[in-house]
Every structure is written in C-alpha cells, then in structure tokens.
Image (cartoon, rainbow, N blue to C red):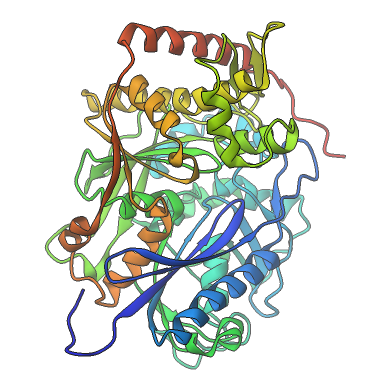
Length: 530
C-alpha cells in the first residue's frame, strides 16, 4: 500500500451486483475482505425461459449494503478511499435519465426470449460480422437483442432521455447522483449522474468493437439499437465520479468518495485472481461457471465454441504493462443454479451447504447424469434450445446420487470449455485458479482436477470478483501501486492435485457427453409469450 506517514489506513468498498443478490465488501490494504453485507435479489420468471430483475430493487440493495459496510468502517474510525463496482454482465437495464425511473424490468443474461431473433440473424448471414467485431456469437445471452426487444416489444420508447445499459452503468449512474446528482468527475455542475460503462462490460453487449474499443455503428444499426442511448465507455481502472445522492444520504461518510473501478464479474474475478500474465486461467463457480484465460494485449481470433472478450483497460494506472488485456472465455449457464434447483425445485437439500456432505455420502453418482440446461447451454455448444435432463436413473437412485451428479456436472461443463480452449491454445492448461461460492467444495475441486489433470487452486478469499473490483478502484486511487504488488498479495488456501486414473476420468466424461447429446435441441420452438 502507498505509504503516507502516520495517516490511517484507507479501505476500498466493492459493490458486487450479482445475479442472485447484491453485496458490498470492505477490503483492506492487504487485499483482504474484512466485512460483508448482503441482500438477496428477487427472481422474476414471467414466461418459460424468461428471467427478469427489478432494477429499483438492485439499486435499493446497493444503497443498503454499501451504507451498512461503510457505516461500520466509520464507527471503527476507518475511511473509504474508493468504491469499485462489479456486476452480472449482459443483463440490460432501460431507464429515463431525466426521471431516474426504470422503464422495464431488467432482462437478465440468462433470459432466452430473443432466441428466434438470433436464429433469424444467423440465417441471414450476420454471424461472421458479429464474430469479427465483438468476439461473441449470436445468442440471447448477450445484450444487443435484449435491448432491441425492449424497444420493439417491451414498450420502451426511444426518447432523448433513454439509457440502455448493463447493471454496472445503472449502479454507477445512481452512485454518482442519478437524476438529481452532480457527481460527475469530468463535468462538474451536471444535473445527473455519470452515464458510463467500462470496456469489459461493453464487450459483452454484441455492440462493441473489441479491437477499436468503441461502439460499432454498423452493429447498432443491425440490431436496431440507438447509439445515443448507450453509455460512454471508460477504462476499467480510473475515476468515473464521486458518490452523491441516495448512497451519501444513507451513509454520510460516503459523500464524495470516488467511484474508480468497474468490471464485469468474470473479468473482475480474473483480475482478483491476479491472473496478470498470458496463459493464466481461472474458473468462477457462481450462478453459472465461467472459465477465462488471459490472452495478452492482442485481440485473439475467437475460436469455435468460445468467446474473445476484453479483460480490462487499466488506463493511466497501467504503468509499464500494456493497459488493455484480452481473454478467451467459455461461459456455462448453470452451476449454482443447479444447486438452487436441488434446494428449491426438488427440496432434497435445505441449504446450499448441504450439497457436498450429501454428495460425499455415496462413492459416485451411480450412473446418473444431470445436465442442468435450464435456460439452454453456453460454451462450447451454444444451444438455446437445450433443456435440463436427468438420465441413468434406476430404482436404487437416491437424492445423494442426484447431488453427486450435480457436482459432477459442474466439473464436466468446465472440462468441455477447457478442452475447447486448449484446442485453440495448442497446449493444455498448466493450472487453474478457482473461486465463487461452489469453490468451497473440496469434492468439486477434486473432480475438476481429475477431469482437467492439472492442479486446481483456491485462494484464501473466495470473493475474488469483489476483490477484482476493489483492487481496480484502489489501483486507480493509489491504494496499491502496481500489478506486481497485487500479485504478491494473492494468497493460497488449498491446492488440489489430480487423483483419479485418466482412463476413469475420461470414461465419466464420455457418459456425460452422451447425456448432453440427449439434452440438446429439446425445445425446438420458443414458447408462445402470450
């Protein structure tokens, strides 16, 4: 940490506006999480395959959690040096910058309502254009078709005050004053908050050219999204504005604190895992699983089944390293969602923590495979019409076998992605750093190590997504001086090495692929939304 004589240590607060909830975390100068506040987010499912959030609820939870953590810091005589923001990516919020009101529920990244529109664009031959400029595929997962749907079918009017942004832009806008504030760092006296996003989130919209690092007029026209409604794109590391408005009223100690770091959750986790060099890889087991490999400072050609994405832009804080880093990514849609299904859908566990002991109570899944394709399948299949499947059930199948099969499915889906990445890189992964809620399960990490045949490491803090946002903000404000300093602060909890015979691991994976084949192309048409 930067020294300043006898001045008290400053802390960084990270806002993690995730899919299942919102949390705020306080991070000290050792990059250690010292306090957390959390609020669960209501999930809305208005139609089969549709997933929505209430943007106002997201913001209310941000205010509550940030004020709670900052208030405790104040009571302990500690100050907040900066705020960083990380978020569920691809989810779209439409709001009116004049009134501050959301114009529709947020359409969540898991939502599949635009599958037919993606099919039509693909059939019309537009996939090569999208791949070339964005590194993405034509899939309902990404933001562009969600924005187009809101305008065409969601009753959102295209007015001069319309903003179409991802959750980070909604949170930053409100933190810096929203409709009534003047927290803009670059435009003092403005009558609203800062309408901005960062390169990592912009790169997930299918509207952003990841080579020129700018919104693409050609893609905006293709999808029918007005460029003027999109946020300004900023570096991931750098001051966007200062806290005013609701958050400052809820906790006065936050007033004037700089908002200085923004990254999509998976890129933030890559940063929080200190994967600062090409070839370093991480997996985050959250609502879904996301494998990212640092691909260097040159945009890679997106390989089949995978995505090329912007990892971060360090702006002026980069020092001697290139400011922009890219990543190869594989996105799996259901990991923690499968555990929620065990708890809420089947009722076979009372809480998520019951999964591992129940799964460990049997030596294996008893031949059962669970394919949790609740909202289609992501990498490397990209099949929006896949649906969940449970195969291999016998009269002897128990709830423990189902729990074990869900744990196995988490590892198998990551192997599918890793196999595709290794095929592109031309060499196997050398190691994998794991984080996210399910990474607390040693059973999962052992299965993952067995399937990948590489060591899997879990850091002392599983909150690497929030750490990434916090360290980006702290780097911008001088709390930390360099990537080397941050790399030295990364701390290992446990490293798990492969134990299973390769032949046995491959046989289990072959059975998994058979189950995947049965789950694919199940919903051949989208449900009638009426």
